[in-house]
Image 1 (cartoon, helix red, strand yellow):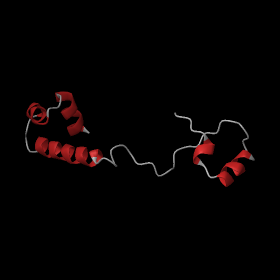
Image 2: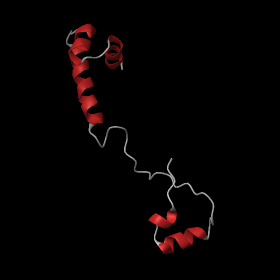
Image 3: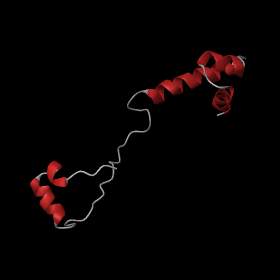
Image 4: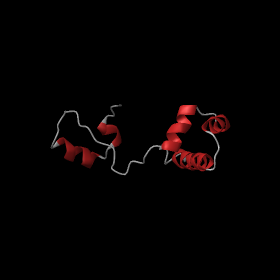
Length: 85
């Protein structure tokens, strides 16, 4: 966690109000509640969801786990977890 001097980032009025409650003490400000889940911003989450759906469909259509692993450059165990998942 990186510490930032509040005087450098907060408006003076807000800083004065905060000082009424915690004068000179360390104050933790949590991340906002609307934090995105892993991969939502970059699109990775959607990419892996689509890929895993394709893997599951291939497996259901009779393609072996070994063949799927080779096609997607995944380990046998990774594919097994996806299809059992």
